[in-house]
Image 1 (cartoon, one colour):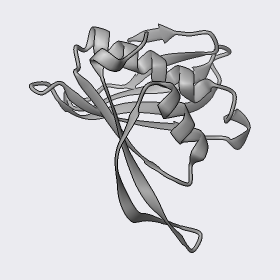
Image 2: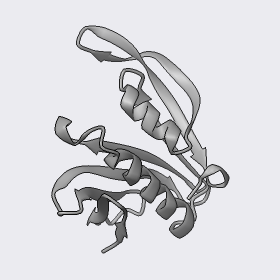
Image 3: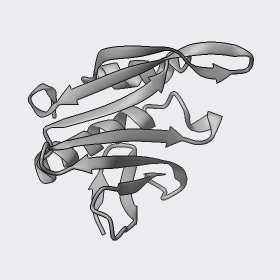
Length: 138
């Protein structure tokens, strides 16, 4: 079991898979209360690429820095322990807190898919973001 510890949260590997293309961790508050999950999927070991996704479930757990800390911990693991070169993600432009979180962690906007997401009767762009190992600040 992989354990990464930070100031506010711990990341614990909670799913093992026969596939080496998916790594999943649960995000727990230090009290071990489950608050969400973070994944690396579509891992290409030859090119050193993976796709990150993050969910902080309850509204009450958002905007406390849990997501930022989880992303920073996972990027450190991805770049320093897994030897990855690049991590990418997609985020809806409407999720401004997530966009700020990813930019704060060093991700750069690489593109947009216009009107890709339909929420509550409105279309939103899907923002494509990425970070390289050389851009990561531990």
